[in-house]
Amino acid sequence: MKLKEIFIPPRLHKGVLHVWLRNFLYYRKTWVASILWTCLEPLMYLGAIGYGLGSYVSNIDGGSYIEFFFPGILCFTAMFVSFIDGTYGNFAKFTYQKTYQTIMLSPVSPEEVVVGEILWTTSKGFFGACGVALVGSLLGLVDSWRIFPTLLFLFSVSWLFSSIAMIVTSIVRNYDSFIYWTSGFLTPMSLIAGVYFPIGQLPDGLRHAAWILPLTHALAAVRDILDGALTWRSALSVFLVLFFGWVLTNVAIHRIRRKLLR
Image (cartoon, rainbow, N blue to C red; front, side, top):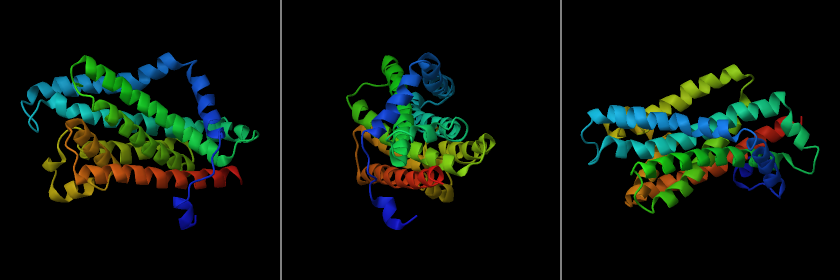
């Protein structure tokens, strides 16, 4: 892959929306189960950890534990839903169902197929974050208009992890390989990125290493946006999420296109 291909935007047309719409039409047939899977698991975390475990924590960063944990579960949901649906779902469509190959029989380019699929899994991660935000508002955890720019930024977070998921899809050979990415990448990242406790509690080396992870920057920016305390650090985190979302999308396009055109 040439360096310039990482930064030059692909030529896209309405085929992207057609791919997204194809997924949406299928989604309508299973929307009840999909919504339950998308929202129920994060809400169980919110209840079990935020309220259950949080009842034993009197104060954290000047507030209750549930107030600290809520931004974390928002980011976790956007990341987890986008990545899981973007790996298992896309691998099935690419390898077994041959959906991508079938779509390309129509006037839709490989670039449009990839971006359309990334847009769809991004939408699902965004829907999940919106569901958690809605429940949070009912519980009194959302009391500011700043939840709207937060959700807008979470769309970018979902896009980033959807792009990573598409790259992983282009690498693995079977379903079993995904467990290495979820257990070796997703889960450790969520444990040290500040979802469950401030990363300041980590040892120095691990704390510095945590800032290499995309979830750390995403969560830091979400906390600052919700608090209305934007700083140069949060601006840098927003930029990095957007930048790497762009770059990794182009990498995913290159890898999937090469496989489709073999």
